[in-house]
Image (cartoon, rainbow, N blue to C red; front, top):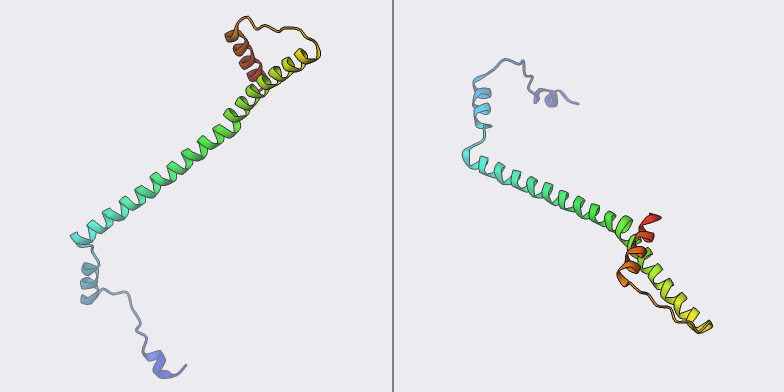
Length: 117
């Protein structure tokens, strides 16, 4: 490093000067720039809303995959199994199976499916 390079640097002694006062005034935001700040805040709000929307979609997806789909699968699986077993028993043993109350049959199936969750 040569002597010329070291002289090009200015040492600040910390005392305020007239130019420092003008620089501090120039650095204050103008009213037009404050409008830009407001639009930047709206952009942040949009990203917050978007983040919350993604979180709510993720929670809905978890609800569907952890609660609703297994419950429906269990319910319809049992319904299919009962139907298949009834068809097999009719084929193997010619006996008529009569369900007297469809509402009761569906309610019992729903309760049985929910009992093991």
